[in-house]
Image 1 (cartoon, rainbow, N blue to C red):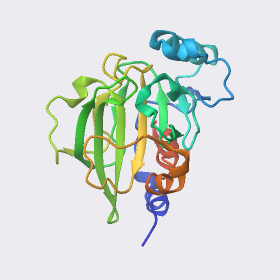
Image 2 (cartoon, one colour):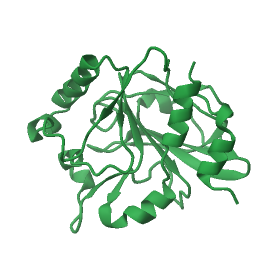
Image 3 (cartoon, rainbow, N blue to C red):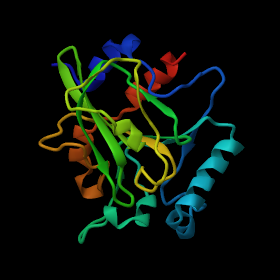
Image 4 (cartoon, one colour):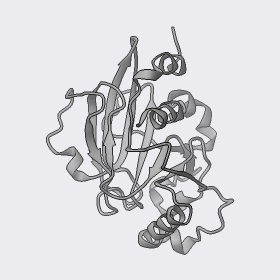
Length: 231
């Protein structure tokens, strides 16, 4: 049986955009959220407006349309919320890719899918409005979690709804509806959802890294294709 990566690569020409992007004119800016980024002080992280301003100024300075947050990145920014703390070991390892951009940014479906589940994970530091889509390509089934959306994105949704490729199905939410974050999309591939609906860990303990990365492969394989195909 083909792997997730093999299936996506074999169907590369069919992968559509997730956000509007022109590779000839638009720029992407990698954003570092590890301990190596000393610009992000505790005070900045604790204040969503200050955190948002930091992101906006970074994009403006580098003339970038979007900021990109990394997969498999050990992050310090999660100290801002008790949502990521446990009694034994905090959750700090990021399992998706973030696309940082303005609230209201349109989110498109990259391939035919159905709605697996959705929820408003309304806790400080959580996803806020969340949609999980189910995909099947060459008989290979997987899911993608879209987090930090607008509440409007959930209106009228039903599990099992068909969402065709290229369809605009969501927008980025404001801090009031996205878990109290600067506006961005959390894009995460999940092979096996188990019995979960509307939610799946986007950050794990480092000690659980291997098992989570196996179930949540690198989504850059989809995003890099859509950036090339988004013309």
